[in-house]
Image (cartoon, rainbow, N blue to C red; front, side, top):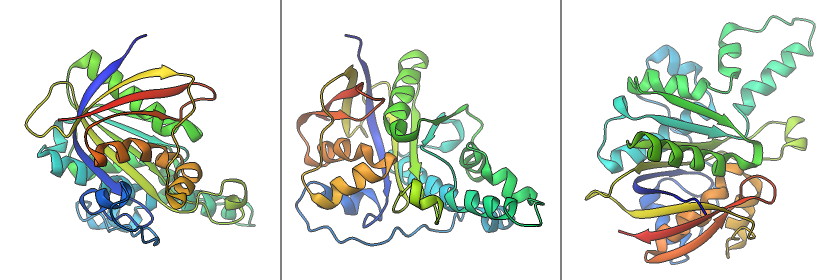
Length: 265
């Protein structure tokens, strides 16, 4: 069975009750109680004022988690290739466009339009960080985390250079929320490297499997994992937080899933 391997050098996390990775580690592995709270999305200070005002939730989430992971790894975003993955796009912006199209005045503003495309967050990332490296943008509905992780690992094996994975999802207002009930914004960022360094947190090795996906023991975490596609990476984060060697199975497409071995560095 073919496997793909990489080293995790930095982690970013933001979601309901999670403000960053260092403060969330003990909570995810059950050493501290989880306090549920709405996700707080910080203003993207690196963006110019005009772009900052126009940025939506998916942009703020991407920048917050990505910059946390890169800072933790001690790297510069300028030369780091990026893999962005999300089940959809900016839910609030999509809602606003649908409202306009359903009204008598169907003139959509250029700002609304350019924020509606799936790669908008990747574009804002390059503006904020000055990144000139290639970016890959994926949309895989509920399989977005697994698809993004596979793409990032493949790039590392082929190109032999670091990659940052950004898996982010945001909620939709009603009535779209009724058919796509993502409860809140959630994002995971991972800086992945081909070789072990002094900053390496864990080594991961992934392959395809038909085994059942791991569930979270905590009911609140399992609710997040099943409700928000980007949160399908929570079992991986739990294994890293626990330390030691673990085997986890992550959701992917249909009956195909990802078997991931996690070994602390």
